[in-house]
Length: 565
Ligand code: ARG
View 1 (cartoon, rainbow, N blue to C red):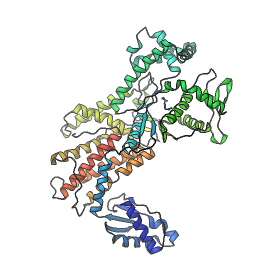
View 2 (view 1 turned 60 degrees about the vertical axis):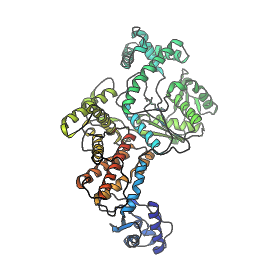
View 3 (view 1 turned 90 degrees about the horizontal axis):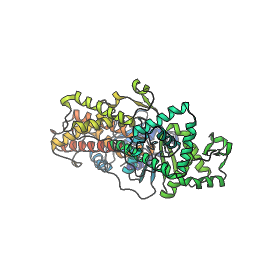
View 4 (view 1 turned 135 degrees about the vertical axis):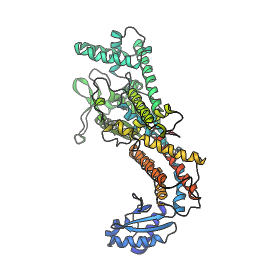
């Protein structure tokens, strides 16, 4: 419909003003009572046509009114044109909303690789790890849902001197307990102890470095030790990923690139991109105008670094998957690192896919107690448990107004969902504020509100004994509330694409929130089950579409919604 509206407007402008190839855009109206769609084309081309915008808008209104499928048109403001489509035209489009609720068939073509979560192992996940994890997973889901092959990649931090530290600590204070039987907290305790003891005995650092060298050199015992740690860590991670509905296609961490760095060092040196820095280290220098500090590729003692492995990771992904792009969903603290990495890949003249650092801000706590907890980071698992406890409390407080067959499951859904929604509903580029009250609020931009609205819609359908309801054809008129709801529903697909292409999950949460508000306004003002036909079928259809869109949208965001609540 948009396309034919564009040509319609162009035809009118050509006929009356001899204007050719005008760029016409139709936007969904933002306010009730301003029609379904609106365009500012009269304002845009007034100057060029040497006409008053109102004059152009008037002509457009007069002509558009005569067109089939347009119920009404009016001029607004300084020269905007608003139009109301006929019920049948609007309703026909609703089938596309239904289609947008199922994942598109995967298009042929290169995949997108999304690098997210990627924790450094051997310690429990902290609350801040949730950011990359859920932003990355939602982006992956957005790509897959819209038909693009996306590879979710957990680039585990499973290599580096910290394993030397752990081995030294284990040797000294492990008391001979088999590593495979330790849990993640015990591993953390060893790590923490190492850092405490190093204060008084700096030589431990050297031991750790030497031990890591031995591990790199292939020492059998150390390898076995390291492997055990990886296993213990993965078990712990998997528990949390399952709770968060997070899955990966690849879990290939830094250790995998160990034997792939040599070739890159060689290439970099040959191409004179890696040059000798202080004490024999290898560094990359960038042109002055780039304002980037030098990037280290190899330390003076010959060991490789995070940066070296990231180069190897880019190379490997290009060779194996020929991706269209690689997205790195990583903390803003690594901004410089990625700028240097991407610039180095350019300097070494690799044929590159689009490389993008999908940045997110820091977590800020509203609750002082959470932010001031000293020492070890707040554990993600504990925060998830706390979220569920708080959700249980909210459910209990609501008494009979919440009906559920399984309040335990509802508590999980609501608790975890609140936390995830609370994060994803914020602009990721800003600091992300952690605020329990807001996250768990029942009538705000929150998971409980979304979940409640979904359950409400499902309940209407249950009472009508219907599941999916087809779009009725015989409806001739729409009430204002119906019309607004239809217009919000029609925007679902566009919103998915927009959230995907800007890598901004909050565009989707904003939309779902608006849909909840629109549905609830409709629900409160129009009878559904008691309405006459064909309004009854139409209203049930809008109810079923609302439920589908809410569920689909929530699941893209890794959130689950209940059928009853
Ligand atoms: N493990 C790193 C960290 O915790 C994040 C890795 C991000 N991905 C990458 N390819 N560098 O800081």
